Figure 1: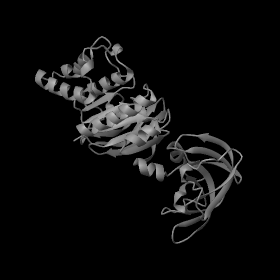
Figure 2: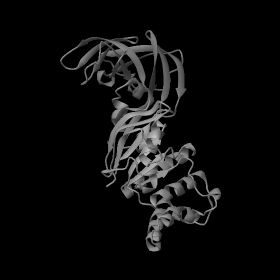
Figure 3: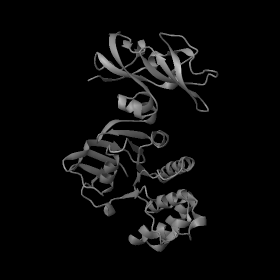
Figure 4: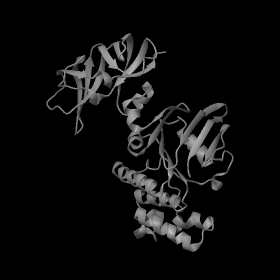
Length: 350
């Protein structure tokens, strides 16, 4: 079993709380991503889980065992560093075997583990090479393999793809996810790249200021963010302030906004009379009519291949929409509509 639980975790540096009273549960075999901007506390939290930092307060349990003060080498975890941390004077095989030799794993078992990981990561042609003879993607696979041969119940990733180009990142992240599933590992993955987080995770913990702002599946985080920070950080969103006028018994909310009056459908009641709301650029429908009919002048146009990104002057403000409709140019005035259920109610305006 490789589940993780944390309760009231806190990490202070000279009185500054880098992680502030965080708690969560991770199921065995689950892939969790810690997502957020630089300085939000995600790497600090990962290092507490790995044992490289002792928390100021709170507890960490791995597979039901309290490991809060257990050193990293005695935890059933493996950490993949951003910098790969390969030994430059050792071959790929020697790098892969290093941890197994340190733990005195018998030769037969060592060879069995090595063969399984080498096959899964397609490293057979590179076993005799030194790290400086490998590409960045190959080095990343070796770093991952070195962690996997230890057969940890929990594997931790500290922005492992940040040094790779975009195409290679896509390939390696697919491999990481496949191997994590094949080996049944519990994984915690740190990144500031929201595309990585959405593509790889069972759940995403969005962090801000040392706290978890929202944790949910990628689909729900994108479709139903709870705060303007999450809405703006996960993908593109039009976030605006709104005055709540009426709420009926069917969950329909009448709003006054700088775009004009809007009707939202929500199972969550507004958190105040003045709130923030959001909608996604791809939700704008240039063909339909409905209760939320808006128009605006195109001030900027950017062709993106499978859609065109448009910035509009709309009402007393601006907004962004994405469309596949051809022929729209800067200076055109266009009309679009939004379904009430596509307008998401967020937090109250302080």
